[in-house]
Length: 193
Image (cartoon, rainbow, N blue to C red):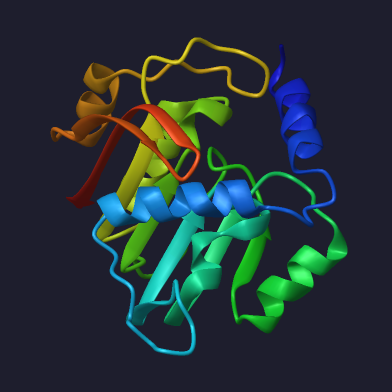
C-alpha cells in the first residue's frame, strides 16, 4: 500500500468523527504512563493542567489529548482531513491545527515545551524522520506507541524497542497492557531533549 492509500484507510476509520470514545479511552491509558495527572477538579473529570506550557501533538487527529488540557498553548499537526466541525472545535479550545505531515514539519522559532506522539509512528511514511523532527523541536518528548505489530492497512511500519531506543538515544519502557480498549505490547517514556 502507498502512503496515500494508508491515509484513505485512516480517514475511513475516523469517518465523520462523531464517536471517538474508543480512541479517547486509549489516550487515558497512554497518558497515565506518560506522567500526566488529572487536576482533580470536581466538576470535570479527565482534565489536565499544563501550567501554561506550549505543546505540539504530532498526529493528534480529530480528538487530540490537548482537548482535555487547560492552561496550554497547543498545536496539532496531522495530515488528514476531517469534517469542518473538528477544526472549529479545536479553534474554540484555543488549539491551532496544522494540516501537515510529520515528515514535512519544520518548526520556526523557539522550541515547544513538550512534543507529544502517541500511536502515530506506525501510520507515517518515514518514522525515523518524524522522530527526528519531534526531538529537534521540543524540550521534552512524551512518547507512546505499539511494538512488533506487523504492517497492515493504515499501519505500514513495524516498530521495535531497538529501533525506538536508537532513534531516541535512550531506553523506553515496554509493557503488555489490556485496559481502556488499549491492548498490546507497548513502548513509552518521557524523554528530555
